[in-house]
Length: 171
Image (tube, rainbow, N blue to C red):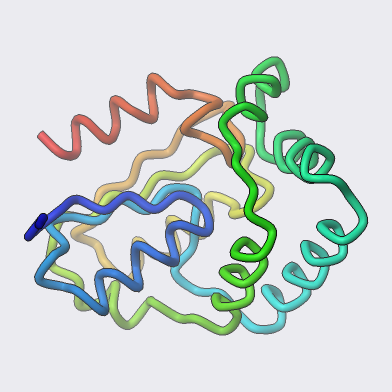
């Protein structure tokens, strides 16, 4: 199997990548956290999860994904491409979102001494760019890439710039 890997977590996947760094530190070569946060306060996240759960119950998969694309994209012309990239699993999506309530990875980030890249976007309404800079305060060894005129779905909104930041970091 794979002994070591570079982990990239986008949005909710950022929580999963950070948990991997805790559970399997020997497997983590580097960590890239994109449009995510390292702190999921109960008072904010529990409300967000309730809203997501309600939205899931009151919409079709297509409607829910459309909502994500509308909130997540700065360039709305990319909505069709974004919709095509989403595969929604209702059961695991809300379960994973619930699991983040109250998580605080900042103590781990403080001690993390492997390469760390934080990617944020200027127009991210889901996880505002302040989250990346807050995380950076806990690990000044991290590199920060801020993408302008870009929403939460930076990997789609500004795919070339996002991918180049990842490539530059890994090389």
